[in-house]
Image 1 (cartoon, one colour):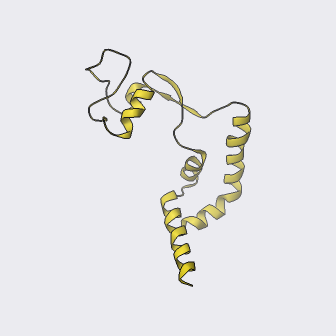
Image 2 (cartoon, rainbow, N blue to C red):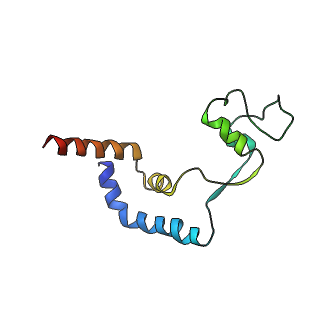
Length: 113
């Protein structure tokens, strides 16, 4: 089954969930968060070179993990990084990269006609 077909099949449910999270909860000032510790923020141990609460590692320097480690140096609740579309796609088992590829193929075919 194509990913676009999967999306169409779950569109009604997905729309309802998306509106609840994105409009209703946001309207009430509620955000989706997850518990972060410095270790699970980047999956590495705290930097031994620093004597501050900034957590980072040599392994994650220069990668997207580096800024994530610096932005979430302490244990606590932090907003999730995924947007609602990514979460819904994961929940319904839809590969968003394949969706984009399928859309591009359809556009290509339409241009050829």
